[in-house]
Image (cartoon, rainbow, N blue to C red; front, side, top):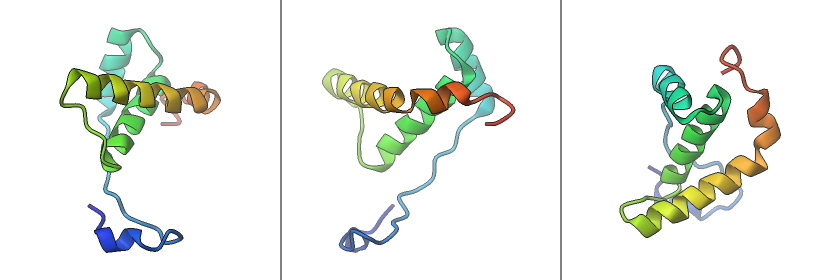
Length: 89
């Protein structure tokens, strides 16, 4: 959503768009994948953020690349993700 000219000032805040998460979907996907709710919410938020900065996954190689980026970001946030509970999120 950001206009290209908005990116010229490296110090300026830029509105990239919005990320919407469905609590019900996150809970269902967490149960199905046998992972915590907090981890699933973090994964969905990271996935949405990667889309906002231009990542996509239309091909198998693009899916692998995006999954690797998601995993890297999740690993760097591991302690904070572990602290998330349904009451906090």
